[in-house]
Image 1 (cartoon, helix red, strand yellow):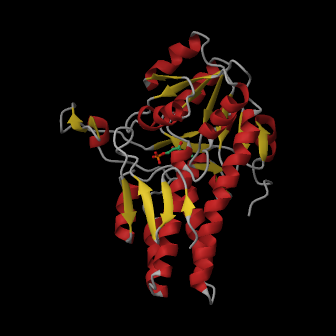
Image 2 (cartoon, helix red, strand yellow):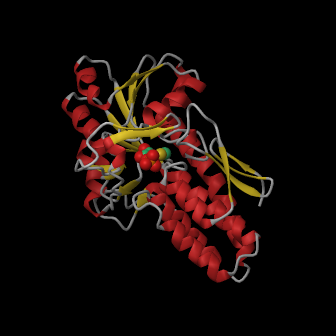
Image 3 (cartoon, rainbow, N blue to C red):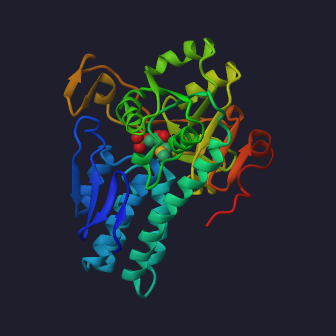
Length: 343
Ligand code: MRU
């Protein structure tokens, strides 16, 4: 396989490397991943996270195992096992389906390697296309609110919603970003703040429950978020808390945009109710953990509600920024996203 290098994932020196996103921003540690079980735990523990990135990381590992001479049967099992790690982000299923198709070819080793390289490089191009299209929705002086982490850490390229923000900042300079901390796992405060800082884009961090008063004060011009799965009617799943923001934005008449590549669109999924939502461990809500250790403040026996994602209905979305174009609400409510050209 050729050398492939992204912000948090690379194929280098004949091995797959992932940057541990659980330890950021205070520790920068790369894991060399050589087995399915290791990659499974990296994904389940969110050391490797973000819809496009988990698909690509799993893909590179399968291609690596093929090059190492794993049997056809073992590779088929690896694809199934990796696909089962997280249920919501459809990019993982998209990548594993592409790898299954490659595995069905007579020359499957080279087919797997070529597919992995193509998916990785395609993601960079999709990010660039979304960033370009989405930045046209931003105006100089805008104050933008975002949720979770959708940047270069979560993709092979510049990111989805955060890629738009990066491009808009390059274009206009004076924009300001409001960053939701994103409880329970804090992807906003740990990862988005870290990325904006490294890009020297001015930002302010807020707890998720502060967005309403911020909007009421007239301090948010637009909201940009990513997606883990978009149904054909335009409903979409993203990090839990996104739906709250959509309701708030609707109430305050603030444009609300979702930014995602075509690989996040699930043409088999008619609406948001059909999107499987991952439920995670109780401890994530009872406390918090990271590079700083672990702290649990709630009673250890507390009942916990911890869906990792929520579904935002299409009627709350102003526009869908895909790599193929920007689709507004009237178009999507009338036609859905069936007609988008997919590969
Ligand atoms: O649980 P995570 O951190 O993998 O969730 C990530 C998100 O919800 C992102 O917003 C989404 O994957 C879009 S990333 C480009």
